[in-house]
Length: 133
Image (cartoon, rainbow, N blue to C red; front, top):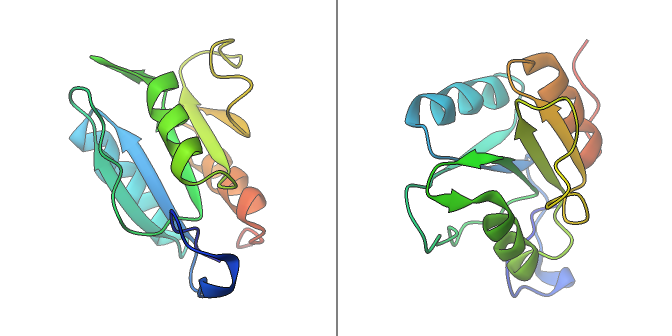
């Protein structure tokens, strides 16, 4: 089910899981979108270059946020996602082998960059979709 900011639960329409992908690097956005779409998800890329960050009006089931966003703090983007889509799971992408403390209470899980299979497994788990065999 898609989560639409401001929508009532009865107005949500079931569809392929939609994934908001937030990054400051266009090549990373394209790569993550290709990986997700190759596994049947709908990617909603959001290029973030500077604050303030305007979230898209389109619905999404889960958000993937890169931790290092240049001039924008990931915690600010995640806080905004939580504000408009309270129940949406948020998956953090990071180079670190642990969850950064500043976002730990706000995100559902994290995946290390460069692990596309783990990315798909985590997204699938968080939206209740079984990974393809």
